[in-house]
Picture 1 (cartoon, rainbow, N blue to C red):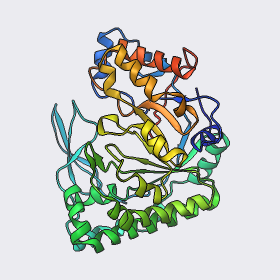
Picture 2: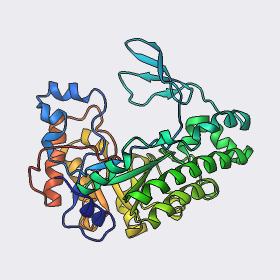
Picture 3: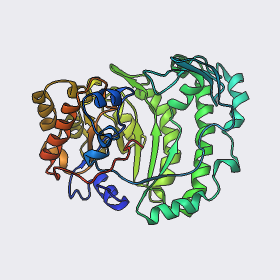
Picture 4: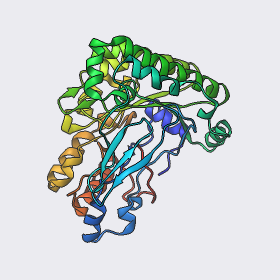
Length: 370
């Protein structure tokens, strides 16, 4: 079912929840389509349109709030992998049969001098706004679409430039470097979105971080408070003052220890809430109440178990306490390989039953990770 902007905002702000939302956030991992075809799946099941998931029409602002310029070209390719030069100036490797995100092999920033060489590429520029981007956003809004602005991650963008290990060391050894990075990027994003939000209402600010693993975050509350909070706040405070309602962060892994710091930095929504990394949406809801909306939270790995395990997971996660808004129910990441088609069908059918939704929803699917 298509959920338009006003209904979605009311739902995510805990104002009105006429019915729970049930979605598929990201779709299948590479290779699952072949497994399902061998098990008799229809093409509609392969592309997920058969399951009647809810979706929100989204309009992402047509702007570049990241690094400018840079080439993206293939250096080497064979049947198993492709090595590219990306826009950051890094060599990256993608394993075709098992991955969707390339692995950087090197990074352009190693110290202040190398940062100062790349810094102008984060400057103000008319090229950042696509022609007609404001009018396109106005038209999308008039159709009931959610207007979303994207900003580079306060951890993720320096990580792209430096790599995780170098960034984590720099918080202690070269704090002035990280401050300058985030001040430069944050100032550019703030000025860019100030122009746009003067002309059209932005509903949601989205940021991608992926800063945690199974055992916890790569950055702690002190670093979030010192480095990331000022960066977040200068952009979010602007948009919120002009009517934006949701500040959503995408980060895998165990975020429990750093959620309070991110809430203090303005965050209002988090996903995908991975159970395998210790994220329990029921416990998070008990702890933070209506301060934090969520998407995901259903253990993707349970789909490879038996029906009893699937039902137990759904009865716990979809319990009445979780149905009062601010919770978009869905798997916590991509549908894993080895998921039997029969189990996935059972998962969808049982979830719809527990949530009181029509057994067969309106055909159609749109990725809800945005």
